[in-house]
Length: 256
Image (cartoon, rainbow, N blue to C red; front, side):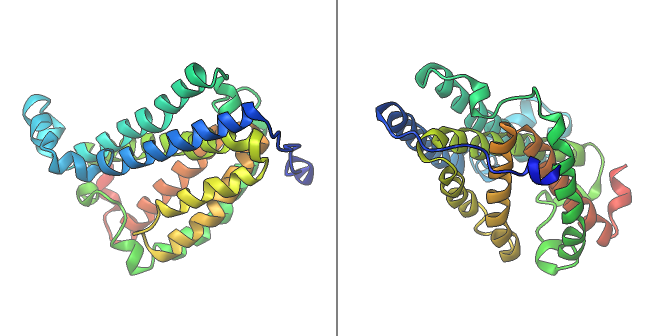
């Protein structure tokens, strides 16, 4: 049964003017969005632009008490806009396609969750080992005050989760499915190149593992015709890493 579920889908390339145009639009839009997100969508921009002070003064509450957490909320929201909303608007209004054809599909995905859960179980010992390395223990969680716990921790994790929703929508949705009709399964390889590159600067084992993650999650998205289960897997792995690092650093009890 598992072999049947992992069977390579029938995704032969369809060369032609229509699929060439579709691929060209997806590649051009993706390039622009990658650039915009890199410079204006990350937590660092929120801090250096002065938004942190504006939000602290005008919104207040936890943003005044923990101004740094606003950057991660910004990260999550801009990911939703630039990686999910804008690409899906392009799909519907420019490409004249349906969003479900680009992986934004909920129907029929439940049967694929056991496979994703299996991948998560396989990752657990890897995460346990990685969390013991200094390169990971000093890198995660991204937000320095997460170890203090409280509302700031949960706001950080919420923004972190939104960021992954946008990430999967962009790479395993818009980019993969947008190139699928033109390049077939090679679209997964094309998507994996920029996906790996956004991990540059992270610990090398994680950046290297991004190659395998891109290929596996891309394949599973095509197989299930949805990037939604990949969101659940990616968030689960990321949050587990944060919790393991906090546990190793003796700060896990602070988050409750």
